[in-house]
Length: 61
Image (cartoon, rainbow, N blue to C red):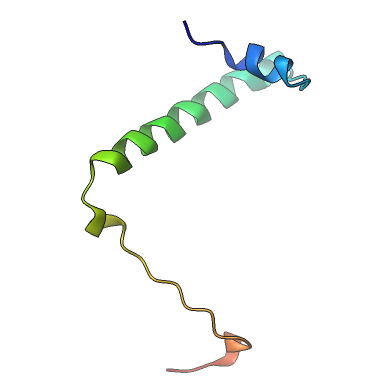
């Protein structure tokens, strides 16, 4: 049995109000869903490139 979000956070000394637990649970489910999706998807779907151009906020191609 997996521990609840509340148990995990309390184990780390983090107190969370009960009204926030539903939000945390929904977000955690969404993150897990994205993780499963990324494992089954083609890597080409996740191929991105980032370029860092120092001072490039005014750079024109």
